[in-house]
Image (cartoon, rainbow, N blue to C red; front, top):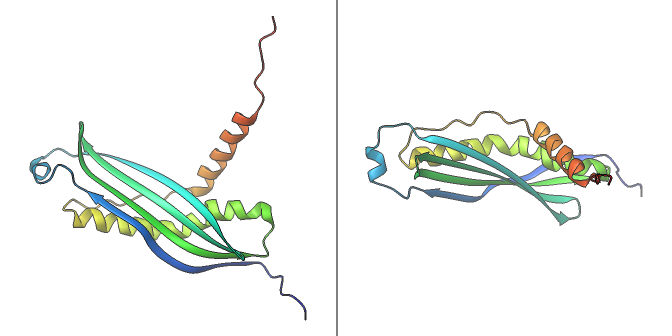
Length: 154
């Protein structure tokens, strides 16, 4: 029997792994009229589950502040189970760091927007993210930190 060696990249399941909404200064914060400063953080992790199956979690953290006061904090862990088989080993990391987050991001964006709205605030629409550029930057930073440092000649 001949084994099928066709490359496989498929979505098995998409789900919200973690969702957290905090409004620590409610209800007083709703009386504020100034627009808060919003910070957005992104994280990505992948776990090999065995037999060509990986879980990838894209974490999006949105923090809104007025000065030192936190207006709200929303964190979404949008996850997916992906089947990645018959792909060269050196191509798996880019798939997990770029392709999978590109698939997960629209779902995370919707979950963030919904959570912010349900918390009583004006919806936040996250701008598109270039996960490939983020991955390349991380590789470049790793290469620079691994480079031997030159000692001054005395």
